[in-house]
Structures are given as structure tokens and as C-alpha cells.
Length: 220
Image (cartoon, rainbow, N blue to C red; front, top):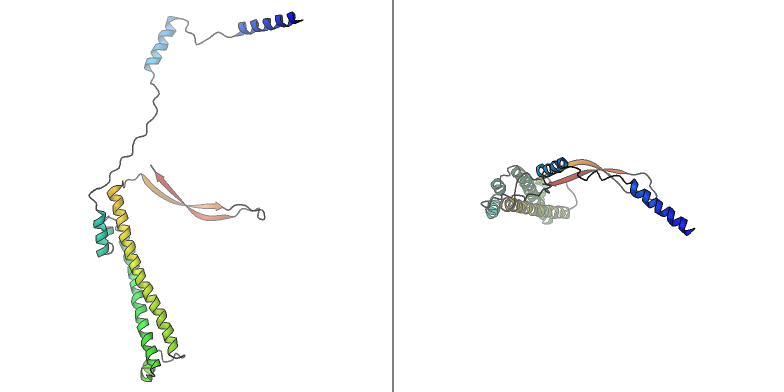
């Protein structure tokens, strides 16, 4: 029985060998060899595409120190030096609004203080001729109002200093970018509306959507 098994295996192996297809890649004649050589000479070899280094063109003559000093002297002057004219109305809009409320709060503080002192000293002539003569409650009412106006006046002064400081910082940062970094169009920012789907919870199988803004930064 073993002899019969080995005989069948040998027959199957011989059949598989003879059943193989001839190798079509093998060059049969001289013409095929010549054509193959010609194709290898005319075809271009594969070369991976190399990434070119980004070229920066900073302006070394643009001085951040000059921008800072100009903004310290006159708000917006540093932005003009950096060629950002559109920021000047924003700066003076903030300074003008805060300046208006500073003066207004200071005037009210002085009026309330005078009225409180007059009522405390019993100066009826001043109280009767004041526009606040109809207000009742004694001098404590005007002392509280004067303290509130004093606080608002001080906050407005701090706001003026903050806007002036932001103006100086903005001028320095922008000048530093111009001095040390490229200011070409390889950087872009895009703001588009989007919808954010909130995560689902066990007690809420309905997804909620929230309108948002999508900010896309592109670096080339």
C-alpha cells in the first residue's frame, strides 16, 4: 500500500511540473533584447520629490525699539510705523471713550462731594440752591454716591493706562515679526461658521447641536 501511495504522489508532482506555463519574461531572441535595452535607456529613473526649504525675507532695518518709543510718545504712532493704519481708529476710539467717562465721573465725584460737605455742615443756602435739593436722606447719600464715582473714575484711569500699554505691546510684537520673520502670504487664517455636535448621554439619546465658529490656520 505504501508503494501505491508514493507512486501516486510522484505522478502528481510530475503532472504539476509539466503543467507550469512557460516564462514569458525570458528573452527569446536578439530583437527583444535590443528593445528592452532601449526602453531602459529612454525611461526616466524614479526620483523622490524633495521639499524645498522655505525662504524667509525679514526686514532687518525695521526697528522694534523705534516702534515702542513712538507708541509710548503718541498712541498709534508705532502702528503707523508698522504700516497698520487700520488699528489707529481702534486705539483712539478706546482712549476717547475711556477719557469721556473719566472726565464725567470726576465731575460727578466733585459735585457729590461738595453736596455731602454742605449738608454735613448745615449749609442750607448751598443745599437749597443745588440741583440736588429735592434729594432726601442727608449727607450720607451723597457720600456713598461720591465714593462710587471715585471708584469709577479710578477704574477709567486704569483703563486708559491699559489701552496705552496694549498699544505699545502690539506695536512691539508687530515690529518684531517684521524684523525677524517672514510676512509673506504663506500664512493664512480663515473663520467659517460650523455646527458642533454635543456628546450623547444615557439619559439623552437625541444629539444637540451648537453653532460655533471654526478657525483654520494654514501654513504653506
